[in-house]
Image 1 (cartoon, rainbow, N blue to C red):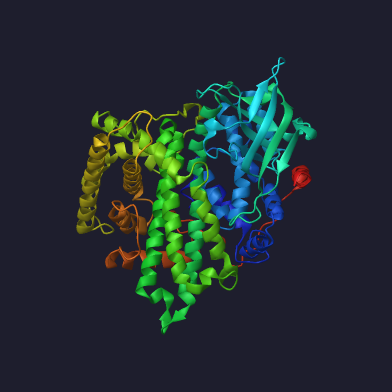
Image 2: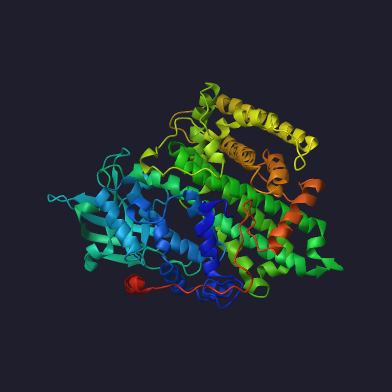
Length: 603
């Protein structure tokens, strides 16, 4: 992993946190299950991460933080989510500070950076309301402007992660009664600026998963907030909110990747040691097939997520489509894999103890919520379906494709993320799928060698040409589908969006392989994993039992190798904390004590 410096921070955090199977470690599976049983917030775990300076990773470098690469940020999220989703989700609200990076003034950005890094304050996202859910345009909480330019809040927001425990909030409020899309504004508000008698917290909601998370709400009664709380221009709140989702949807995939790794790791370890019918479960063909399929899904999800993270830097204007693709595909792949893996554990998947502290059930339960975050799968598919005709027309127009070499080449540095380039509509561009003709040309020119036989290469070329034909057929079907202005998208249009997502992820895998095959190791270059992804691209719903025997015979040994060598299930050479490795104590937590005390005050 030394040749990919963007992963050094995640590797360091992985080692600092130690082995999650060592019960004495703060972020251990044993502690995660203990808190889960108690329905308790992970106070000590949050404090531990604060002490290690993790908030700095959420603040751009020009504001004093360490955020320079979305790929690095994605990797850090995987490290947390593989240990405890309750902690990862509780900590992930820190991401909402980036609304300040998108729309805030320089002074506002520096103020928010101070709250995050120096005071350890966590934000919460106050968008949804009980009567309107994801329909943000119908929200009723109002911010009425005073003659002095300040605002008075009235109304409630619910449900919200960290509503009670947050130190500041990102609030979407109605600032006029018009029916147009300029009727909401965005505010970032420090609770210290509010009079306590004019706001209140709603009771915490019990949830089926993520036990211990602060899922509650906040309400306002004639609550005065300063004019300086307004982010961007008045009336631009919905636009900023949607741009924010383009980033957070992309980063949600870190949670799924962490969940997928732990689920597969726990099941593969169980299968390697559990004996049935005179042999281990891992020796049973059906169990091996399920685990190999889950492994392919993990690698496919990694490819889509990794390129989305890099794409935020190279092609931010395209993320009205790209972010939905990344979120839907990763959650679908991992959720389905986890459900299939449960059958390998048998009765133990349903037990709250025994194998790995009963952690698999928590993983299965907690991981399924990611598909709902920041716009559920139906919302993402609906958004993508609306944009499909412009994407197909642009490809038919034969517009020159963008240079994607640096996007695919993991050795290439990413430029700074330019938040100002985020747009509500991507103008019909998708750099990944547009790169397919160039990738095919590169593949045709590739010579065979000892790692990649002529037959293997020929098979890959056939699959890639079939992929191009699938894209062409999809474009024809998209353009043949009638679009009625103002009408809801049909089930068929949703299905077209699902096909598009599968093809995008297959092209992403091909591009990643072609641009990295000489420096990512033998397994990567041999492209068995790529064959499996391309084989499945035409089927949005995967079942176990569809991998040919020759692919299975190559994939499962690599899964076993990464398990036994203590590596992340990844295309990247990424060691996890060694068995029995204790955590590294934070150097100092003194500058974070104020926030911990503050959170308890509002609990």
